[in-house]
Image (cartoon, rainbow, N blue to C red; front, side, top):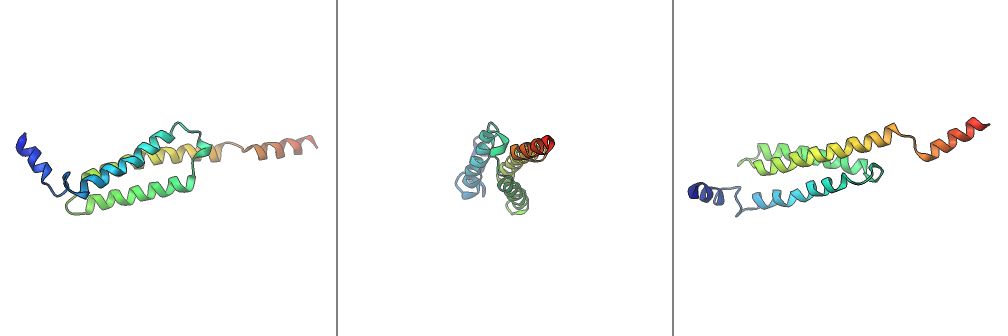
Length: 113
């Protein structure tokens, strides 16, 4: 056990490097996305959520292809991708399946004529 812990500690992606602490800091994106799940979908920015999806997908590929392979970075961006895709589908369902209040009032006033 001690030798495997020592090997992890001294590895190129271990806790003595930015390759460890960078992904740990990126878990802030995941936590923020999880907190935002409780907010109503009309507060979600579709553009920003789409950008976060593209960002996480590109960095997942980078983390997989870089040498030494950084699986922690790949994992954190995978988690963020899942959270952001969920937020994007919540926004999409709200945006494209409901009728905003202005349209409702326009339709109802046209029907009364």
